[in-house]
Image (cartoon, rainbow, N blue to C red):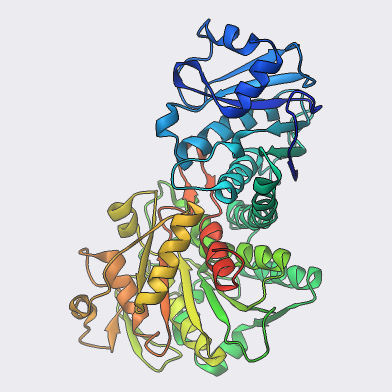
Length: 499
């Protein structure tokens, strides 16, 4: 879908569909009031009949409104004016775009960016509108034999703001939002692919394809033989149960000065996780194709950064493997040696994400990074603790943690910080190795991060546990693309392109 920013007299702007917000009790938004005056009060008369209702996201399509050049006018409920929030605005946008996308218009003019919630601004309102529209129109049909897209899918979204001063911020938001939307879509596409198609080798191929598209991106793939020579015993132990060879995917973008330290993003790339010998229950095991969504978010964030040409250095590291039961697979009680030289007793083979991440994190030391952020669908315990709304954040650096939290709040892709106290470290004690790979039922998300913290002592590091946010279950099952918006916002701020 194409995006552009528009100003001007709404009554005189030609469009296939004009989207207007209406608040509870038939209170017109600013843009709707303009159209009402131009139509001789026709909107007010229609709303008095009560057909729109009071709920956020309720819609009403109007035709042949007098005094208006728009072919259609789509009214959407936005709830009480005093309670307008970013969440309610996004809900209204999604509802309106859903109606337009399934109808006849291929182009719409949306005035909802002009409705700025309290505590927000034109930049965020515009970017939120664009991203909500992009999410609503996303479809994954690659694995269907006969895809059924809309006959006239929505192909162009024009975002209206009241004046030229607001248009400047809106245009900047549109450029940033479009890049983020592309990154989110890539992350969703990779996450939604089944494990028989999206293998470690497939992910490596996608990195090489990205490198061919963008000359500033250098791609290197470490094969199993190289990892064996380096001593990545933790990562390789997970891969032993699979016929698919593991890959360590390295993607380097140099948009900053040659001596600028890079930001390193490390994404868990478990393309399918059956749990290994500690096999998972059959119910919902299909969703373990989403266990590579951390790696997918690294791909998506790199794409957004490349589209924007961010003036910084960025390295994506994606350890990719499968975790399956086999005669050669890890067994509970096995002891493996990580790249750092530390030994690990594998008490539960289903706690494999931290095994591939610890070697990738140790490998990242060689880049002399400014900061390192790992992203992983790491623990069900994080879902129990936080649900599906925020990602879990743990960090060994107060400043970095604050940056990540701020990026989450600004982007609407929120995180919540959990403690990383040394008090939890003794849960990882082992009689037979330097540490165990699990620390018991209590504080599982925290002890998983404590495990990773033993491999990041030399770095400013943050860990995002996205087990609750990376995908949806049930009827709406599918990858979300999170936390690409958070990570891209983090990079935009570091690059000095947003306040």
